[in-house]
Length: 133
Image 1 (tube, rainbow, N blue to C red):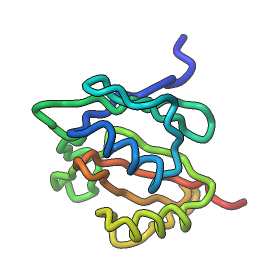
Image 2 (image 1 turned 180 degrees about the horizontal axis):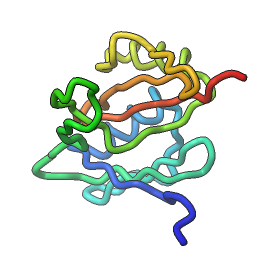
Image 3 (image 1 turned 180 degrees about the vertical axis):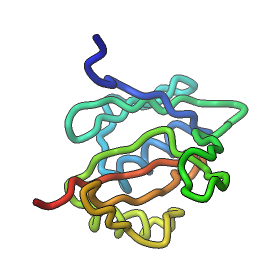
């Protein structure tokens, strides 16, 4: 009954600065000018929307889980995973911007290439690239 995720909502401390970062570093497009106090709408390559909403308490998107690590250790999980067709260029853009990323891109075989990173507000994400056939 549910087809896909149409949009996602992300807490940010400053929507204007966040929109600039998402555009410059991740290549998203700003849909319309940022309205003070209202947030920003970013458009991803395939048309999905990411709403950057001001959050006075600024609790980043992340949570702890024991269901991800094989050894049962606690892991800081990302709630959103983006897809890319060029993970190497994205990794370079993240590094150039001084963004926290995992040490390296991981080759997960049939699960493709993967990389974890955080935006300037500490929202944690993963990016994924389809495996080459």
